[in-house]
Amino acid sequence: MTAPRTSIHGEWSTRLAFILAATGSAVGLGNIWKFPYITGENGGGAFVLVYLLCIACIGIPIMMAEVLLGRRGRQSPINTMATLSAEIGHSSHWKYLGWAGVLAGFLILSYYSVIAGWALAYAFRTGSGVFINVTADGAGSIFGRFIADPEKLLAWHTVFMVMTTVIVARGVRSGLEKAVRFLMPTLFVLLLVLVGYAMNSGEFNRAVSFLFDADFSKISADSVLTAMGHAFFTLSLGMGAIMVYGSYLPKDTSIARTSIIIAVMDTLVALFAGLAIFPLVFANGLEPGSGPGLIFQTLPIAFGHMDGGTFFGTLFFVLLVFAAWSSAISLIEPAVAWLVENRKQNRVYAAAVVGLLTWLLGLLTVLSFNLWSDVKPLAFVEKFQNSTFFDLLDYLTSNIMLPLGGLLIAVFAGWLMDRKATMEELDIHDHLHVGYRIWRVLVRYVAPIAVAIVFLKVTGILDVINNLF
Ligand code: TRP
Image (tube, rainbow, N blue to C red; front, side, top):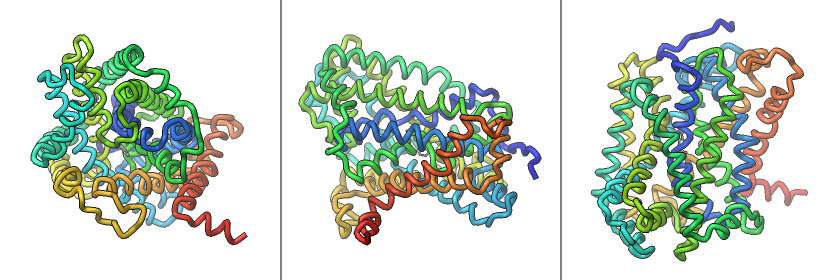
């Protein structure tokens, strides 16, 4: 049965609307906050190269697979997986892939919202002028005092969760689609302005060589896993966010072309963020590996010394909040769509329930930076000796759940789904089409095998197998 289905939640108005929504989902804290600090922690160049390879060879093909499954199923990821697997006579257990995605989205948003709260707070702080002529030490201690205060973090986390819930409750189309249309290009331009500032005032050449000179001796199996996990995270893959957005995609849109556009834009934003931040890190004697506070300790220095810095700084953090906002909604959309489909809840109620649960779980992250900074729940595992709840949530989702979800999506689209069905969704009518064949090789072999090897390597299983021979 291949009768075209329609989505009960509606469709994007145009192809551009989908590109904006999916780019809105992809571009977020992952690009501007996370990419620079994990690049710093993992030694730069070689890490960036592995990340770029993962985007091209794993990220793009899996993004196409996710959009394709979503558009074919036209429902929440849980029901899409159930429907599509039934259609090809496979076990309905595939719906648990949808469930795992719902869980991952909920776990990610719980900490994502806390960090987005930092960006909100920084929009106000920058606006108040506290960073004018600030030194590196000054910016560091302002940040230190901020995260040491659980009440402040909680308050901003609450504000951000309310913002997210309200938009999801209203349906994506009426509010955010319009805002994102205007905000994303502005963010892009502002990042370029910051890169320009960093070129003139920072150690730009050192930053470029840090980011692009690959020194593979600095990289471990764990760094490779982090790079791969981040490729999933930054493109919003592996948990059904892009699948649910794909389910609202009009029939005649090219999945390949749009996926590539989204991935390229996402990657450019991350690289510009790196080029804006690292020159300042080096010029101010900061530590590239100083962790999640990196952008909050470096960018205020730039804004504090730049003409019009108070204005541009405020604008920058406001835009960062918008980028995070358009990502956050995609993290709970799969859960909300499911509640609407199966439980016949209205969107407002569904969004409120999911939002409240996420808010509660967010308390773990709020406390990870202050009262519970010494709580190391998995201290008995050597690798996680120093990991707080926040670190563990991040590791579990980015490094395990998303790659595993992506692997299963690739297997489903590449091995189980009828070849004809995938060709039809990708609008390809010739078996020998080069693009289609490349996609198929990537999604059947390259992506699943790469993910599997990295997992085996990190868990040490690969070494055990090696020793056998
Ligand atoms: N991609 C977003 C970012 O880089 C975060 C995000 C949104 C996400 N939706 C997702 C990550 C789904 C993983 C899965 O900030």
